[in-house]
Amino acid sequence: MTMKHNFAWAKTGFAGLMGGLAVLLSAAVSCTKDDPVAGVSDAGTNDWIYKVMTDYYLWNEDVPGKGDLDFSQSPDRFFASLLSEQDGVKYGDGWLTFSRIEKKKEETKSISESDSYGFEFAQYQDKEKGVYYAWVLYVLPGSPAAEAGLQRGDWIIAVGSETPNVTSASAFYSGSATTFLLADAKREGNKVTFYKRKAIPVAASRAVEDTPFLKDSVYTVGGKKIGYLVYNHFSSGPDDESTTYDDRMKQLFAGFKAENVSEFVLDLRYNQGGLVSCAQLMTSLLAPASALGKTFCMIEHNEKQAKSNETLLLKKNAEMGNVNLDLKRLYVLTGSVTASASEAVINCLIPYLTRNQITIIGEKTIGKRVGSNTFGTRENYDWLLHPITLRIFNADHEADYADGFEPDVKIEELIIGNDLLPFGDTNETLFAEALARITGLKSRTVSAESGGAIRLAPSSLERKPVQGLVFEPEK
Image 1 (cartoon, helix red, strand yellow):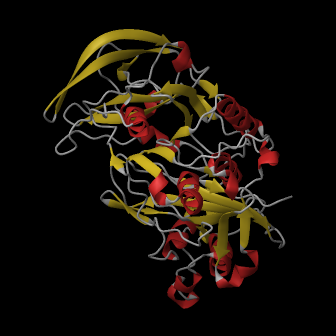
Image 2 (cartoon, helix red, strand yellow):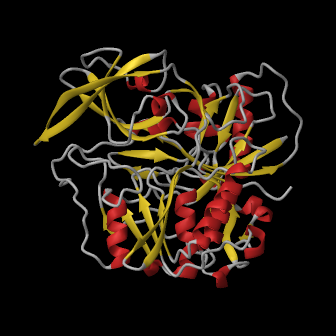
Image 3 (spheres, helix red, strand yellow):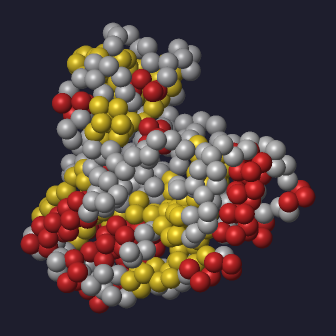
């Protein structure tokens, strides 16, 4: 059989805006066994699940004995009964479980969004009226939303109507050609009032490429050359076989190099993760030149699978087209869903830059420092398993961010009353703070007080199909 390793997490027992959030940290390896026959019973499926968990689960010593389990349960309930209390992190008022199980669906190699208007948003619910509003976080190029002129910071208060009417946030995801009613929002205490602005026509939803590159710029401020990149997921290309995005990343850094960039702001505020190979490439492009060719990360499994432990190296400059920036410090913008591969880049740069030279601006990251395998992709079971199977460490064998990376400068972006200015705008809340730190100028950051404020979570990002940190060994 073929088995995939995934650094995976899923949410259990957590009510509220973050329901359903999943961030994966994945690696692909292989093992062999005969495929089961189609139509396997739940008990038969559960036998397979139990074997996988006792062999590969990182905390396999915590899996209950067979005599303490009910093999007649549905596979999802059975899987949940095997999980360790170490599996996950506290998030808000609930618990985010990293391991997960899912029903198989039709496979697709594309990471493009299917049937989407092409924007992500934070949602606000008026509980008295029972309606939802969408605060636009970003718009994907070439999407129906982009063609309609929708912009980051816009509020959508109705779909296909002149009055607020969205009772399910899914109306903002996809649908037929319609109109979005835009509005301005005003907050007084804990009350929000929306003022109609205009209605814009929007074409029917369609497949939209979910490019990871939303903004790249070079700024000259106070005599310093500053590079800025909004990078939304660690993907090598729009499908499993492509390296289009890796090639684009190297092209972008060639541009930064040509501009003699010596300071860099990496915007990962909405980045939930992706391929470890992309994290390896990104880290190699940012690291001091003296670090190239040295350890990027160490991956370790449980005792049964210790033979699969390995060390990955930072790429050499020649492998990347000689576009390493040889940075001495880095500024990283983070948000409440920043996780997995994003955190791995920060952690794996620490041995070479030191933590003091990495300034994190924004919110605390998730704390995703373990990984999982995907089992069942080629078997005839109706389920895919993503149990945690490995830990990831930096070159100093450290991974001290179980509770997430605390920001050096805490700024809560998604509070009603803040402005969501375009990415790269020098007055944009998080970026302005980074520029102030780089240049020594007075901070221009203005952020609403979080105490008693109406704070939102980037809820639409919960459905994104990005697979946290995915490791694919050499072919």
